[in-house]
Amino acid sequence: MVRKAREGFLSEEANAMLRTLGEHIRLARKRRRWTRPELASRTGVSVPTLARLESGSANIGMHQLMAVLTAFGLVADVAALANPATDAEGARLEALARGRAAAGVAAQPPIDTDF
Image (cartoon, rainbow, N blue to C red):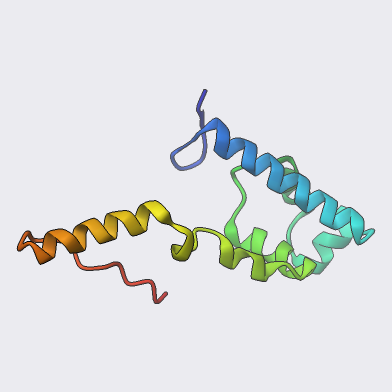
C-alpha cells in the first residue's frame, strides 16, 4: 500500500523508515530527559510538530528536522544520507554512461556533487 504524502508518494518501506526515525528522535529526547516543550524551546519547533516528527509523519520540514538533530548534537549524521559514495546503483549508471561516451555514444555529463 502506498500513502500519499504532501508531495509524491511514499512506499511502505519509506513510511516504516520515517516511523523508525521518529522513534529514534523520541528516544534521543527522552535520554536527555527533555520534555517536548523543552525541546521546542531549544529548537523553535512547535510542540505539535515535534509530536508529528516523533510519530513518523512525512509532513515535517527539513529545517525542523535539522533543528532537532542540531539540538541533539546529531546533525553530522545527516551526511550519511544519500551519500554518493554508497550509491551503488548511481555509480553503476554513471559508469555505464561513461562507457557509452567512450564508445562514441552521447552521454550526459557526470553529476556535479559540489552543493
